[in-house]
Image (cartoon, rainbow over all chains, first blue to last red; front, side, top):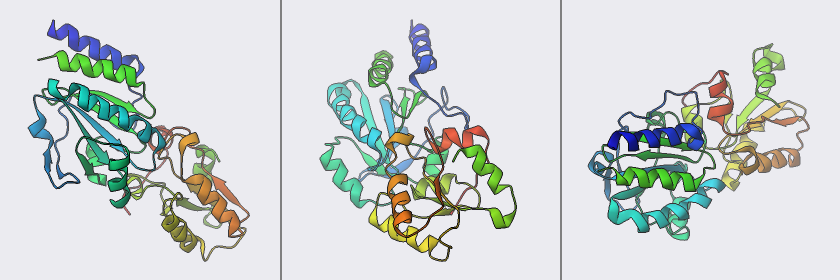
Length: 166
Length: 119
């Protein structure tokens, strides 16, 4: 049953949920690259410590219009699914922190936000366009990648399937 | 300007080569950019437009300047339009914008055009 559920997730992703760029090897099915950063509040964020949770890792920037559209939805999901083991982590690709601090308040981001850098972008296959979102399963493996303006209903469906896998 | 047209220009004689400027995110520039291009600040920000002025200060007004970003889909890019407008206000008459429909990763790197890393 678990294998069937995983197959459904992969099928959904391959059906068009992830407009993956072709310039980098896909991370799908591989262990999500580990990173440790301090979030904007100073709290240590270690991706490895999230094992057991479904993680939505979102690369965004304050000047990215599609990003600003989907971030409030992610905040809603954090509220709705947090108790089930869902965790959003947002990585800002802004060059400066000041506008990020303002956006976090304006967009009511209720999850950790860390400042990104070129290395983190490289580790995740090159962040050469925004937004980019990864769904990472409870075992720490990358289950899906979404680039550009994404179908949030489909993303939520995939996320819920991952949450159902214990 | 289409990516293939710019790639052809960049492979030509040095005297004909345009001044190529990235007017988007510095972090993205560090990850990948067009070889020979310079980072010129985010066009959506006043500080970015100031940096852009510095990058074109020594260029002739009829010099071919190609600006690009690729942070977001073409219709959503906040940077190229203000940068283009600013260059026109400065008197530059031969400014082109590189057409990147989706993002720099998909439409330049992913299509096999040359890319460089770092500052």
